[in-house]
Length: 181
Ligand SMILES: Nc1nc2c(ncn2[C@@H]2O[C@H](COP(=O)(O)OP(=O)(O)OP(=O)(O)O)[C@@H](O)[C@H]2O)c(=O)[nH]1
Ligand SMILES: [Mg+2]
Image (cartoon, rainbow, N blue to C red):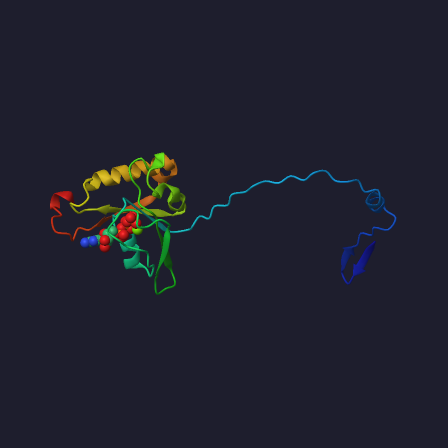
């Protein structure tokens, strides 16, 4: 049936006496349906992903520049789930940071916790490597950076395209030699 309503047409389909209605009367039992299992993964959208060894000071950093209040402690793997924090500027712009658990060498072989959350950093526009400059960290600063970068590239080659900055932490601690800088 075609009805004219003002200047437009609306087409109404009637079931009376047409082929469709006959088909409904001659219903056949349906066949078994199918089901699928879907695993949904929430990826946080951050501007900057914080990358570092455990205990490097990632959570301290995010708690210093944002209102995020992650757990901070002087042992490794204090952070077991990612934390988000936002830096808000007066002109309404903002930068979102994500703090993930620390990475270790061979993260790509399922060592440590951080690799499980690297997908959050893969979504981030850029990265900040938090490098422990103190003598407490036995791995020299440049080696920390080299190992971390290598682990990221093993996770995904697209990490190579990300802009990054390097943040030295714990340089205030006594015993941090200039040769480490
Ligand atoms: N002196 C000094 N201590 C720091 C600095 N940054 C962090 N710390 C201390 O280092 C320890 C570890 O800091 P966290 O921020 O928990 O380190 P993290 O990188 O988040 O560690 P994980 O969550 O285990 O990966 C804490 O005791 C902090 O107080 C720093 O710049 N100077
Ligand atoms: Mg932490």
